[in-house]
Image 1 (cartoon, helix red, strand yellow):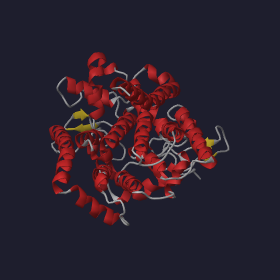
Image 2 (cartoon, rainbow, N blue to C red):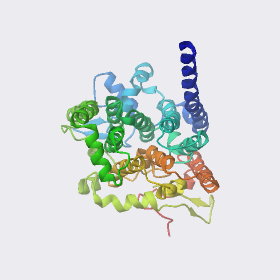
Image 3 (cartoon, rainbow, N blue to C red):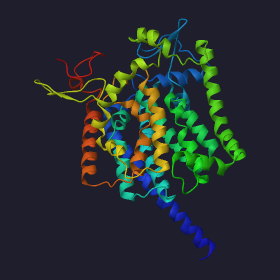
Image 4 (cartoon, rainbow, N blue to C red):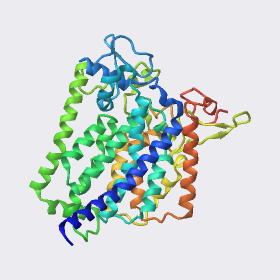
Length: 438
């Protein structure tokens, strides 16, 4: 075969590899646009990132005057600030430079929402090509479908307000981080994407176990009987100099982003470690002052939200009630139960599990459970890795799996339609109500 023919065959192969993710992206745009409906016609009421982007474009970190409302704005020394980490606002700056405060943050969010399942499809496809696990294109497409519309990603994707924009942007950055981490080949990009993910959703900072595994994996012994022997053999194989070089390349962009965030925090709140959450003008300021932002005190409540909440039947229309704290993970996405019983545990599966645990812990110790929400939205901080665990579990996706996947899609479609539209399904405004009122 001539070089031209080889080059042409290679280009066609790349195009075929891109076809799946592009189809998923287009389908995501269509579905999320349809479920967003009239929301897309105007920016959200909670467009904090737009105000932050506008301020940065004009050389200031504080708002010019008072915010449009008092929901989740920080006040310090008689000035008002956006406490949310700034990466999404930085990405919005070109649009805000053109449209100002009228920039449509919901349309911005829509494109990131569609990119999430597409990037997950691409990443799983890449892992199959590398021989990391065996899955057909149909199975990969099923998992991308479940991620997009069979998890709390669905209701979050069609909101467009600041809390949900953060999840959509961070999900894309987390998947780019995972892709750059594979085999430890692109440590600078991996560190950059993880740093940007942290600058969107801070719990993602501790997703580094996945990169460490991928960096060591090419040097791992093929016959290691235990995780400890695998780790020792990998460290011996990579050598100190190569390990230090990879870690330095990974750490430098991460450290630069952390330094910039600390400088921004110091300029705003006179404390490099304060994003502004302690200065939020919200109803639970007292508990933050008492217990801090992260504390074991919050663990029981957060576990209840993540694992125990279910809807209830009522005797009056609309005959169904959902706590505003949301629904349990296993209820919104029952196929996640497959993760508990993998057919076999590979080093990849273990690395994914460690990464999920690392990111989940700060969420479970945080002073807020995610209120208001249809399901436990903080799970989106590690949901891409849960989907990869399903792919790497070795479990067959038979009729029961497909039935439960369809059930999850139906549940989350209900959430995408009703949340923030039909409050009669979410009957109580009390932050203390988790289960059916007696």
